[in-house]
Image 1 (cartoon, rainbow, N blue to C red):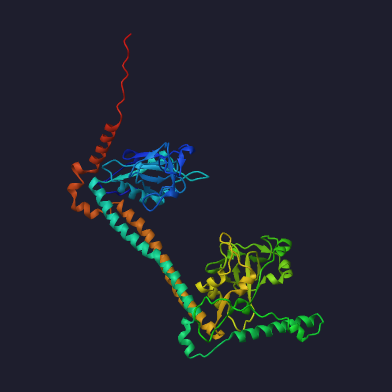
Image 2 (cartoon, rainbow, N blue to C red; image 1 turned 180 degrees about the vertical axis):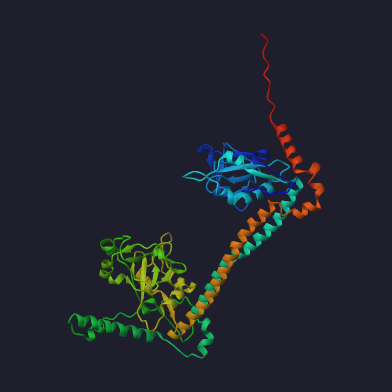
Length: 504
């Protein structure tokens, strides 16, 4: 930290020469409670708020105390953050209290430590927890302008940093707005509003009867192929073994276009999972194996997520074809906190299905675009449909049959493509805004430190000093202020009692 080129009317001294420094100390554990017995007890940064800390613990036998308006400095990982005590409090060893004299504004001291924070964060030492010592704090350089200029610095910083905070708040609100925007896009997509005009000149339609007929035909072709491969005769009795898809029990999508169909996942997809005995008997992970394993962690709120994959041998994957993944399948988390989260497998790689994730394979590929159905199931209506079957509050779960029962809407394939293209255009615009917001947030975060740097280099109040020379010289100078502080500190020291020798 450089203090070169300070204004001539400013002084640089050590913090200990101006402020009192109280190092925190842990009280006896038996005196700490959450029953509001004693005074508030703060231990470190975890209790800090925007300006004042939030009480959690209390102490009946404090060892070190901070007073109202003392600056609370975090001295153990993380080093540097600050808050202001708003009442008398006990402080633990994760904190130090910086107490300014009456003629040094505590707000000025707070801003000064905000200015130092990035530098302080790099000064901690220690292998387990980075920390700064009391000696280090006492020997920190401290800038002393005149008393009136301190007040002017605080006034200008209050105004400017409040404006910065307003900008931050507006920027911070945008991600939530964009999240709502994306959900409104999906709501319009799955209700038909997004393609309302398109349908007027594109008279495509699909019915549940058509879907069921296609499903039966595909099943029957595969059944005949299977029977013939085993050398068996094909009879009408075999065809009678067909099990129709589950019919929808509820409509979570409201009124849908008459050209669309309301059906279930079972109509269009095959749903499966890795059986427990398969995992126990066959699956072994090793970094040197071939095929990455998809687990629940790979399916987030926004779809598929790349992670550091566990891997299994190709021979295992070949032996368990039901759990082989080739791309474009849907994944649904069926147990735990992420239950109901949906993702689509990318096309560029082969995977193996791991635990806690259902594999939802497109069955009637001519009728569906799986990417459209990923968005559909991620919509609020799609999530309501899936989670309506979920059981258990602490550990929610879905069975494969419950996933098959989930209601979906099916537009004609031509309309699915148009909807998907519209979603991507609108989502891309939202992502572009998000990128601009991220850039703006980084710049605003730098702006705070830039303003503080100008304040403590003298640049912020340079014009003010030119106009108020009488307030920063002579008896109003920084030298006079520092001398006054030293005099008051000497006067406040307790008088040592002189021991009187008894006459012999």
